[in-house]
Length: 274
Image (cartoon, rainbow, N blue to C red):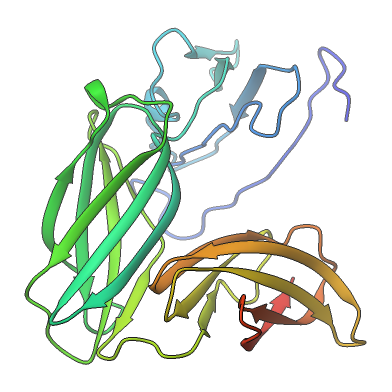
């Protein structure tokens, strides 16, 4: 795609319905250079009619000297970014396992920026979550470019199934929720695909996999004609694992996802790609 200076390029049109006097706000997140490339300048302009109460100064994750706001002659506002704006934490993996009457949770970060730490949340129904503890960031000053390993023990397990997630909190007050790990009352004896979300998926699907042992799995994605459309290796820990898989390269349709353990055990699940 090329952009000619002075030419308007409309990326999206958003229409708000309802009371125009409501305090409706718009937040734009800029993933500049997320996939590589040399362009580090991005412009967003928002034209509004009525009811827009957007605080344009908070449109972006704050990065001093990078995000700036401005106003056109007709009073419309814009945001310009110069450089990379990244989310505070890159979460490589999140998993858990039964340890007697306790549940052990483990997660690994690849990078951290301005990270305060992680609030561990638990639910018995997968809908209503409550905080059961907080783990401070291991990064010096909340910033790190190396892998860091975290652990948390839930000593007060109740119910037959527990749902866990992390609320990553940064030093400026922002937060982000992780994927979900589900632990059952019994330790898994077979490798299983416990779920996929979102399903249908557009770009990334999160696979919820239970494994009785630490293992390297072979994942294949097969279309309804039996053709293998994707294959890759996935590392799992003992217990419940939530692993993101990029499916953006698949055409729309229905697929079978097959997991094969190092001992030849097989489990399958159905994926719908939009």
